[in-house]
Length: 186
Image 1 (cartoon, rainbow, N blue to C red):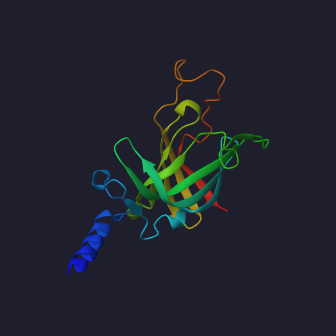
Image 2 (cartoon, rainbow, N blue to C red; image 1 turned 45 degrees about the vertical axis):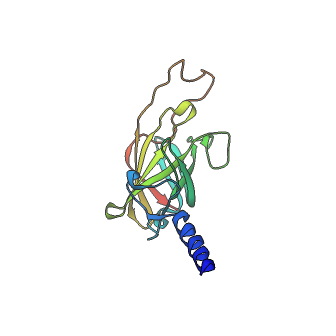
Image 3 (cartoon, helix red, strand yellow; image 1 turned 135 degrees about the vertical axis):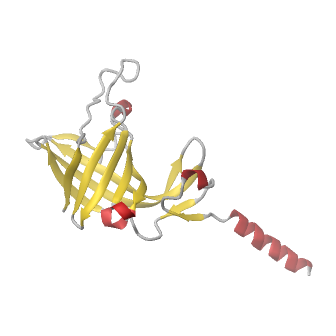
């Protein structure tokens, strides 16, 4: 009988400490520390791929992948989430690379999904901005067909102050600051 209580106690302790799995779009306030926000319905998969567009003469290529169990560390809690990770290359009209987060790890730039609105075919991405966080903000990708997404970029900060960033760093925003730009899947 004593052994049965020990086994039962271990069983209860295991399930009390097991990672809680929740669906995408769980409200932030409802996410417990250490939880896993999982893409249970594969809602992110249709966005995965390589997409290209032209804007003001520049060629932009997006490399969108899905990362499972991405650690999200906010000031309030830590949890894991399935997310779209976007890397990109921007080239000028002559083919010179202006910015490359796909092949160059020097940039500390992140662009990843935080929410998806499946009913509207829209995924919300957070962009960390370029050097010194210039251009940080929100990007929305709307799936308009199996091979096309519409892009909207809403920067929250597009200026640099002397105290914020050394003058030698490139703080130009190379991503298209526009709405309704069509990217085509390759």
